[in-house]
Image (tube, rainbow, N blue to C red):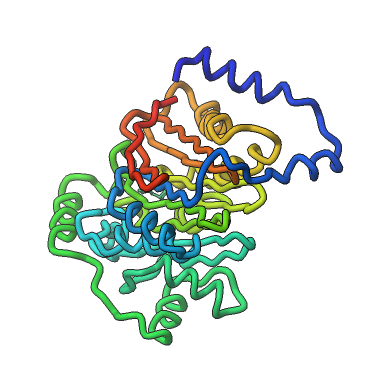
Length: 322
Ligand code: SD4
């Protein structure tokens, strides 16, 4: 994005007058309009099939939470995606540990962190939300919960990801890979025919991370946030930076204050970049949707795109970098 356009858009956003709490409440209720037809599904990256599966399920009347999880499962099952689910890259000790969260239109949410031997972790996050009094389960606890619900036990490390890990061990001096290519987390936001918004986020995290490291993806407010009165956002990329700026919550709260989804994504990326000297060497990207079905997106670097299913078409949109 051109610096001037960006500045103009943020100056415009900053021009909103200070509002009192009462006005704030009134402003927060963005009413659905007939401008955009529902359902809509958007997801990070070029995950065509995942978004199509979610979009078609929504067309058939599925609710937004189930559709988002169904879409996420396509990538969780995909061994070729080395950043999500089965075939995900392991930590530096060779364990594949998965993180996921979900949030629905009633502000219910659930998350699982560092889970091993379970493929469908977004669904497991929903089970935490619906079947326990808790919001987050981690590690062994999350895994035994999965077993109690008869999730199959699956070895997540594939031959290919093991080979890549062994190569990395020889060459990389145990540095986690944090370059701008290494991000394929699925974050998916769905609005169903009723106009209700839910989302899911699922990842194996940074390749060759330290054992026990958790990024933004399963952290409600960082990797994903939904407020059905306003909109939702999801993140992908360098999780540490997203956590530090509570990125998805920030975007939704900016939309509540009147920012468009695009202006809100721009501002969330600006908060990250403004702490750095120059453009940093890591990637972070956001997608957001408001209650009316308007979409925004921004990444730090080139190469990010997102899928958008609406009016029965599923298209890939390239995102201009910051
Ligand atoms: C993380 N945000 O664990 C994730 C990484 C990611 O595609 O997006 N990978 O920090």
